[in-house]
Length: 150
Image (cartoon, rainbow, N blue to C red):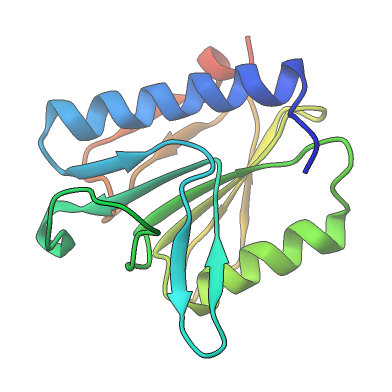
């Protein structure tokens, strides 16, 4: 995979920082940086690495160790890179949701949109005029997207 560009890195860092600050402030669990591998299944192995992930405290069973995280995250952030196709992003988000992710965020730096995926609901497309909420995954979290897409 090629390194991410300016917009990908900047928007991803800004959103991940907001999410992780809230997670740590409220002792909700653990945030994971980009490229952390999550083993979603074995035989065959399925390992994915989102741009940011969160696992709720109640689901953490041990301290960080070597190897991939053997849990499905509660939340993932996937940021579209210039080389990503719409179908490729849709497939990746569907895979995450199929394994049980409760909140998947699809960030589009070029169009300044954030699509929110939750189980059993159609995707919700947000713009700078909207506010992202954490739902039942990050209770009380709100972020006016005008701050992200300024």
